[in-house]
Image (cartoon, rainbow, N blue to C red; front, side, top):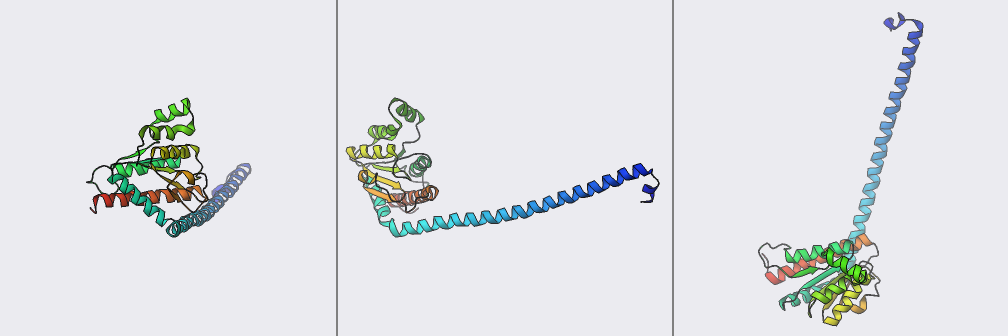
Amino acid sequence: MKKLNRLPIFLREVILVAKNKYTKFSDSIIKKGVEKVVRDTNDDHNFNIEIKKRIKKSITIKEKIIEDNIDVISKVVKKIIEAYQQGKKTIWFGNGGSAADAQHLACELVSRFHMAKRPAIPSLALTTNTSILTAVSNDFNFDNVFERQVEAFAEEGDVLIGITTSGTSANVIKALKFGKKKGTINVAFTGENISKIEDVVDYLVDVPSRDTPRIQEAHIMIGHIICDLVEKTLFGEK
C-alpha cells in the first residue's frame, strides 16, 4: 500500500478501479461456479429419481408377465423344441427395435446362448438382407418385405415369430398370414390390448404395457428365456 501511495494520483485511481473490478469479477465467477455445482447436484438427484421410476416400471411389467404370460411362453418353448426335433427352423422378423430383436434372437440360436460346444440351431432373421428389403419395398410395397421372404424360405412346420410392439405392423401381419397358408406355427410378441394380429397367430405373447421401451425390454427378456430353454432342452446342461 505504501508503494501505491508513491504513485501519481491518476495512476493510483486506475489501479484501485481495476482491483475493485477484478474482485467483483472473481466473486461473480465463484458464485456462478457454486450455483452450477448446486444445479448439477440437483440434476443428478432428479436423474436418480427418473432412473428409479423407469426400472421400477420395468420390474412391475415383468411381474405381470409372470402372472399373465407364463403359460403361453411355456407353450411357445415346447412348440419350438418340437419343430427343431422335426428338422424345422425358426424365422424372426419385426421393424426398428423389433428388427434388432429379431436379429439378436436368431443369433443366439445359430451361434450359442450359453453352450459353446453344441450344433448350430437353424434360425433366420428376415431383417438382414438390405438388397431383398429394398428390392421388395421398391418393386412391390414395404408391407410385403417379410411376406415375400416367408414365401421364399418358410416351410410347413417352421415357427414364425413376428415382433411388433403395437401389434398392428402391416408387414408383420401379412407375413404371418402368408405363413398360415404354408402351414407354419405362428407366434407374435406384442404389447397389450391387441386385436388385429390375433387371427393370424397360434400363440400371442402380449406384454401387459403400452410403453414401447418397456415392451421391448420385456420382448428381449422373453426371447432370451426361450433361447435358453430351447438350447438346454435340445442339448442338455453343459
